[in-house]
Length: 316
Image (cartoon, rainbow, N blue to C red):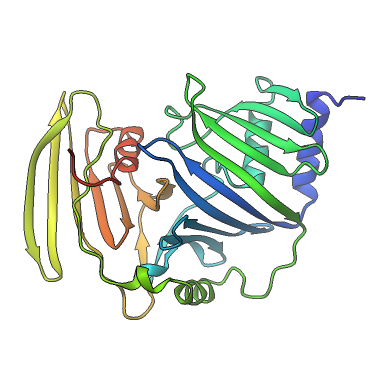
């Protein structure tokens, strides 16, 4: 006897409310750039509000951990020995493609309109999204396993059904017991620091990166280089079509002792790293470089689109 959409939604709701914790592993593929970026994601959640999401790229030389514990929401960047602290209600404030309860929440939110089908192994829903840049990825297809309702895969799509982001879960353990200290900021930082490969600790040359995805009519106007105490700072200015923005890049300093930096704004997933989004700026660190994108005229969607496209070397 096949279950109806309403039955499955009820079961999902019960599953989320009954579970105490879970651990999941997933592969996150971001297909918006010239070549897909692939990350290994390790997710721990213990109710009510402890989270640890570890993101590592395929080469393992870039890693970040998003933590939520009693002290707040932190983004740890082990390569810089820095943790960034947010006054944020993450992950409640928007959809998170790698968090089970967030996916179920999206299904519940959109239950009237959600498209539902059952395959041999899975229940599949198509729902609206609640992402920070939902204009780019307005819908998602979520598959849950028929066996235990665990998440199987998520595809985030644009209006033409192109898959821009995909998450494939490889193992979900419900009601997992975590060690004391599993969500502790200092402990996570010291473990992550020990895991950084030697190659990633070497001083990398600083190459200027340019955004590939610009708002319509906006072009590069100027590139200035300034000397700073620890090297150089490069300031790129773009404008056109009544819109302008500035992108500042400089070498990030590795903190001698673990440093916590308070951030305003919300943590946002840029694909290759986690940044901080405010009303008119995004800041992030990647490959040993600090970036700041500032604009009074761009919407948050446009800011995110530009920031997500800053990961390739000079324009040809």
